[in-house]
Structure formats: structure tokens, C-alpha cells
Length: 463
Image (cartoon, rainbow, N blue to C red; front, side, top):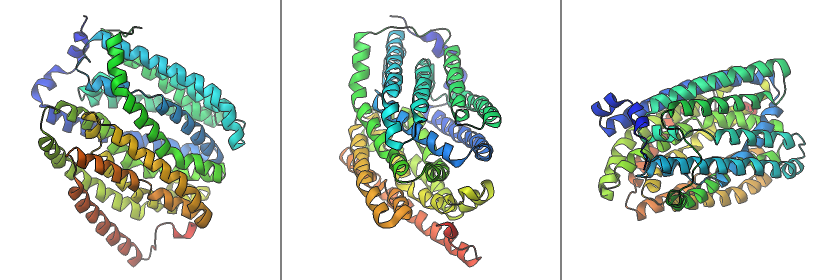
């Protein structure tokens, strides 16, 4: 059986010898945070320019279209990437070829479904343009399906430096295309062209990385069986992730105007910065790292996670405290008065990210030990909560009530994940309690300071 040794030799051997896997994990985490900072800077720069070229309604429409494509994406996710990272056969070309072929089949199904759902969704939201937007984004997913498995191998080996470099370059090129088209045409398709450009570049670049062992169409029975046996719970978990994580956009798009959804999108994009950092670390560092230590006892594994997790959570807690106390001025400084309503939404959404961060910083351990069912259950509970709480909160509290319901929506899933961690002897509830207490005290002190110097509460003038 052919082994993809050439690609592995192309990885940085000198660093692999010098660094322990733990050190590589720290190095990878640093690159992820550094890369994320650059990426957010690029996105913010682009966002500021685009909000001056395009009206808020267009951001609401594109958010809605992307939500449904994300749903199709997650409802067809069989965990190909995690399966490669976890598998002992990830150096075998026949396994990687089978994974790549399944990935293309899946993306083709995604594109087909995007055509089928576009018309009903456009009728539901009374937005005819969705008939074109949704299939267009679905086609972008089809392009992405052809990317090489080399990117998963880089993740497995914690070679984040290469991945960060690739993604930053792709983002820059994509943004240039998007801004150029928005400047000349001022329509919603400017927001889509950048996605197509980035997808094409990513596919070509991934195959350049894998030039010595080209992926080819191949389906081997045992490889497919292994991927599906692990992926069945991933499929359920990611489907529930979509329902739990995107219900706010779906319902707000129905309850309010596209303009309000566009303003909410500006706020949630900023609020989710800590969430996205911890999610990237969880999938690209924590999960591969834990997968290397599966032979250890649960207590040893728990201690390893606890020691590294505590330091990072403290840093995130202080950042969230500062951001939730003063982030309204980001909106005032960067956007015009059309977006000022986001000034009170952003601080609340930011503090509401904390239960998610606590959960995501450790739930990768449940995936690594082969227990993704807890994640699926947690997101299902969150989805049910949103389905019930959001309309009721809107009925009695209007838009403000709806936002409060969203702010606390991660608490139900946090409870379920901690139940799973306790059953698997990986619980760190005491660490969570201590750091949460630190966050609350720190944030209250900052808000008192803000009131003392005459700034009032964040965004109060625009509720």
C-alpha cells in the first residue's frame, strides 16, 4: 500500500526533532492567535470600507443566505477532517484518497441542495434575490470540495504556520476583489465574488502543498467505513451546531427587517472574536494534542488540559471584561449613525460568549475520546431553547428581549457538556467557577470606573 511519505518529509523535519509535541502545540497556538489577529484586522478594514459602499440591508441579505448554506454544509458534515486527524491510517494514500473523494461527493450534494431550497426560502422571507444568492454560495462550496487533504495533515502535525500564511494571503486577495467590485457596482454580488476567488486559490494552493502525492478519485471500503463510523456522531453534532448557532439569524431575519439583521450582524461579528479564537484553538490545537495522549489515564489527561487551559481562560476573561465594558466606542468610531444601534448590542453579546468559551475550551476532549454525542445533545438543547425563548422574549420584550435571550443561550449547552465531562471523568467545573468569578468582579469594576468618569453604561442612548 502506497504511503504518503514524501508529503510528510516536506513538513519541517528540523522543528519536529527540536520541539516536543507540547512545545509544538504552544507554537501552533501562538501562530493561530497571531494569524487570527491579522485576519481580524483585514476583515475589520474591509468591513469599514464595505459599510460605506453598501447599505445595511445587503449585509442582512448576505447573512441570511450564508446561514442557510452553512446549515446545508453542517447537515452534510461527516467529519472527514477530524477523521483524518484522529486516524492511524492518515499516512496511507488510499485512506486520504477515499476521504478526498467523499469530500467531493458531499460538496456536490451541498450544491444540488442549495438549488432546491433557494426558491422556498426566498418565498418564506419575501426576498426574491435569495433565489440567486443561495445557489451562488452553494457553488462556492462545490469548489471548496476539491481542496487537497494536505491541509488536514498540516493540522494533524500542528503545522499552523503554513496554514496561517495561506489563509492570510487568500483573505487579502479576496478582499481586494470584493472592495473593487463593490466600488464600481455597489450591489450584493460584490460580497460573493470574494468568496469564489478565495475558494479557487485555496484549492490550487492545497494541491501545490500536496504535489508529491496527488489526491485522486478512489473509494476503499475499509477507509469509507472508518470515516463513517466516526463521522455519524460528527454529522449529528455539526447539524445541531448549526441549529443552535444560527437560529438567532434565522429568527431575527423573520421577526425584523434586513436592516436590523445587518446591524445585528455587525455586532455579532465583533462579539464572536473571542469565540472564534477559542474555536480555532480547540479544533486546530487542543483536539490534535489530546488525540496524541489518548493512551493516558483520564486523570492524567484532565490534569494536562487543566494546567494549560486555566492560563488561557484568564487572558480571555480579562479581554472579555474590557471589551464588554468599552466596545460601544468601537461602533461609534468605526461606523456611521446607521449602525449605532449595535453599540448596546455588542457589549451584551460579548459577555454572553463566556459560557461558550468555557465549553469550547474543553469539549474537544470529548471528540478526541470518541464521545461527540454530548456535543450533539448540548447543541440540540440550545436549539430547543432558542426556538422557544427567542419568540417569547420578542413577544414580551421586543428587540431588547430577543437580544437578552440570545445573550444567555449558551448556558443550557454548557450544562450538558459538563454533564458529559463529569461522566467521562474530565470535568473542570471548579476551574470554570473560579475564573467566572474573576470575570464578573473585573467587569463590574470596569463598569463602575466607566460610570465614575461620566461615560454611563455602554450604548444606553441607542436602546
